Length: 226
Image: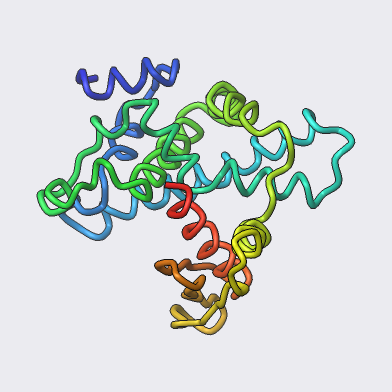
């Protein structure tokens, strides 16, 4: 195993039986020479996303035994959001370990939260594929428990938080606009924008209009906080 992979393996505190699993997880599709090869990263990302959601849900269920489903769902959504997963990816050193195409490299791909989040999920998928659920769950527990500690109260959903932000400043309610619908009819992806008077808007995607609106509201809130 080369030093690049070894650094990530040490950060994970996991030794791969098949290091090629980790190599695949750290090779972005942009750097692959064929679509078939690039699909390996995407398949691991798909797997890791499900592992992450399951383990974080299990952690929340055990930690907050008296909370209703709605509060748990908001906590889960916040913890598996792109920016939270990207934070963990940076902490694991994935930004420096990724193999990217020249275009992605020059375009700032190593600092792209979406790319880092995808890579983090792919790495979790690689651990699961290599060693099963328990080592992958151990990594999630170790890395996501501190994120849980940062938010003692259940987070508000982004649409509600954005509405309260606007009302507190005497602004009209946010306006949501569906910009586009992508994908096949049985699996559409909605693109929605949100605007608040006097502020630059934001957009988000989701498998339903509501999910896209929540994503757009979250993106705008992130910008307003910065």
